[in-house]
Length: 294
Image 1: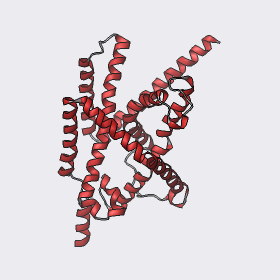
Image 2: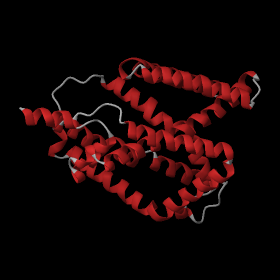
Image 3: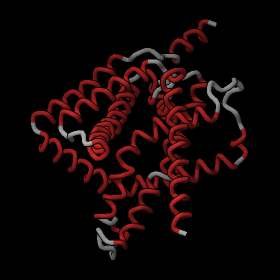
Image 4: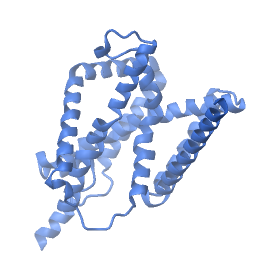
């Protein structure tokens, strides 16, 4: 009993790891201060870093995505696909679960990349489309195909497929915490939970999430400011953009602090229902115009 109690205490560490907090928060603060001092230099460093990563790890990343997709597909259609990780009743219905994924995880990147990625590929076609001239009608199909590739089955297989299955298995079957470091357990065993490698994994995950959300949130301020200007003539100034970001930040903080069961769940459901209403309105308006033309 003593061994089991010690093991449970060791594995179920769900509290705040202040080392991870200070490293991740410190990095973000240093990055923001550096950008305020010299945004051009920071932009050049980010651009050069992205180019270096693409040059040396781009092919590996594509192979990893494809392998993850087929491995996850094999698990799903094989004999292991019907295994349940737990017999407990789910906390959320399928609709609520999908709504939260679509409006938080997917929407965070979609706000930015749904517009920027097709335009980027349209202006600068990928290398496999060497004969296509950017900015022409020929570049439309390749641009959209690359966007669908990046935001299609391959991305979800890596993000919500094997990683989610592995994390869920280790949490429900072995009692490990729901933290990024747990994904290292098959390799590092107990060291993944209480070693520097685990702490670094959590810190890098926090920094990665911040890097993936700060940009889209900033872009959201530009989008909303431009929309207000186009619809109601509100001046598209830095002050307006800053006010939008402050309001969004306050709203985001209030929603996230209430947890999944309250703020995030209700907001996700409202977003999905509103999306269906807007989509239905657009469809009816389109059909009305088609009937009028005919």
